[in-house]
Length: 182
Ligand SMILES: C[S@@+](CC[C@H](N)C(=O)[O-])C[C@H]1O[C@@H](n2cnc3c(N)ncnc32)[C@H](O)[C@@H]1O
Image 1 (cartoon, helix red, strand yellow):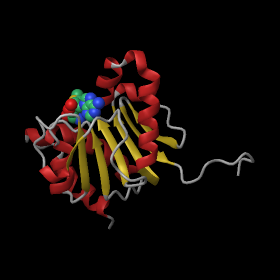
Image 2 (cartoon, protein in one colour):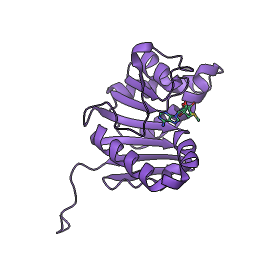
Image 3 (cartoon, protein in one colour):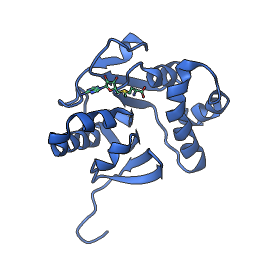
């Protein structure tokens, strides 16, 4: 059983939980688990939660499921997860992580905020985010998004695996397509 399989196994009883700290994270994990259970072997051991806010995804992912999750946010003020799992950083500047560091990068409701705020520089914003996501996700790794604005991201090295309302799961291709269509 992969680490993510055990997450899926444990997750299902949790998802109807009334605990408020699970409710936000629950939305995301619910979709990941359903996608995983139905189609994919995600094999996720490391994850980056962009704009983590309270850090629910970090807390649930690391403490409950043993995934190495880092939460990154502009402000530490509202974060309630494990201190060592938080990185205070503006995602609009280069991210402080090595290339290929994560199996999964995810964001919940962050891009809607960003694109709304930065309409004038929308192209710069989306191209910076696309290139950092591409850089820090390992080959065959994943990007999971829950923001309607993430439709504007152009992710040339990813393929869209699933698109369910504002939930989208992408997988990074292992090789660039050759000119000969091989
Ligand atoms: C709508 S909240 C979503 C929080 C959390 N992902 C959730 O679903 O509960 C957006 C979060 O993005 C953070 N954020 C906004 N701009 C950011 C930036 N440039 N860099 C990093 N974080 C940012 C905010 O501080 C806030 O915590």
